[in-house]
Length: 456
Image 1 (tube, rainbow, N blue to C red):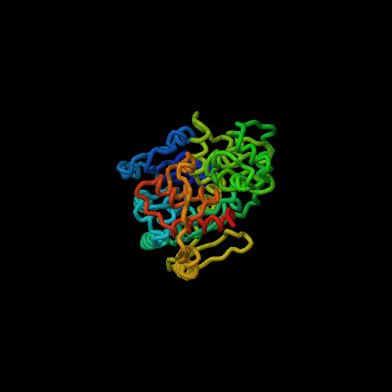
Image 2: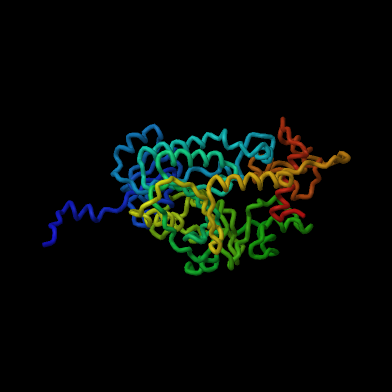
């Protein structure tokens, strides 16, 4: 005789695993987790950025948009929680991180420790605290790869906290385009877990042409005259700014972000709606094209706001495809037994053909050795030579909107315009009163422009 199943029993059997989000902003990460079969019951947010879009797409989800209310929110959650996933701001460790020093370079040249003074580090601590209160089976925190190199002490501290709470720790290095994402976007997942993880199969990257083809014929806002001039002389994949160095170009400055997409390659990381230009037409992308290149699900709604605001929400998100992939990985090993000793490993799957793993401490020591070897090349000192005599008129090189009031961006623009070191310094000191920039700062930017292929 089969056991009688009550209505309550049937409903329990149908219950989806519970997932809780932290600092996922507009909610694309939640979209991927939901598509993986979870119930996303709560969002814990340190700010209200993207909150309106998230509410539009997840009307049944409870939102806690002030860390002071999180404790009450934890009490409302249906236990057990299988997955707590979060995406706090990664700009703390970004190359483009704003700073208050004399130049962008000086913030990182001082031991790459500027992140320690960033108030958003507290957001990480808030999320870990609520994570330990919730006690999920799996905790996932996403960030950019420089976070592991520059903020290694921070992640080692997180490792110790979670291992002390009886979790294993895996630091997963991956490229979104191999795990369901649309962009060539290298990222890391810090994962604390109470059962083994099972990685889903890799996915084949799609090109820009393949992603845009289903949309058919589209239109968009045309480029302004100077950008159209550069576009006509560019090849797919070119940065338009390189075209200003031909000697023929005479016009306003061009952002180093402006890139003509290559239809035969996966999309690069899209920082804003005005960073990537259509591969075959001299125009900006429209909303449908932005959605396609950011892997936004068809059902996901956007609020009625400008393309800039929508593009920023897409850019700051963990995209739905990688979100779904990691959520499936978190569920795959449920029920499997783990060893008696807690472990911490780095799994490097940036190249799917060569997946390797290291002990987390071993990987940290290896990176220390590499940094020691690279330090002289990474921060070259200016040669002792005769001081240049600059005859430049700083008034000819005013600050422009694309500089965003930052010494670093202004310095890069002048170097790309061909000015010498002393001329660049004269312009900096004329336009940034009180700046302490030196030739070492100019050398820093010249070095990185050479690494990016923008300068011989």
